[in-house]
Image 1: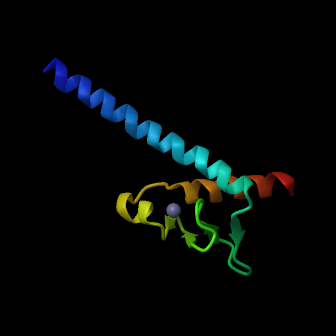
Image 2: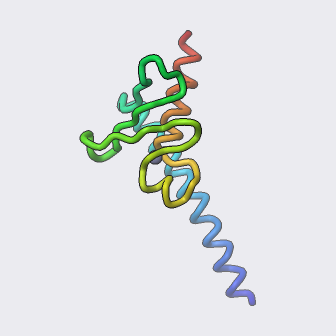
Length: 93
Ligand SMILES: [Zn+2]
């Protein structure tokens, strides 16, 4: 029982760490200028892949077209990058 509990805690921590990593990568992606707002569409963003500039993902209405989001249906680094991008834009207005 004690071992089971320990494993659960470790697993939970890892998932939170993974999510923190997505946030960190979101900042990196945003700072690298990889987030672009689609002209005329306020809530649609194109985000370049962190590792491959030839790959583009679409972030729209809290969804993303990347494999990470498709698999988990939860905030990916591109969505964080978009969030930070919006926050930055609103700050500078
Ligand atoms: Zn994504």
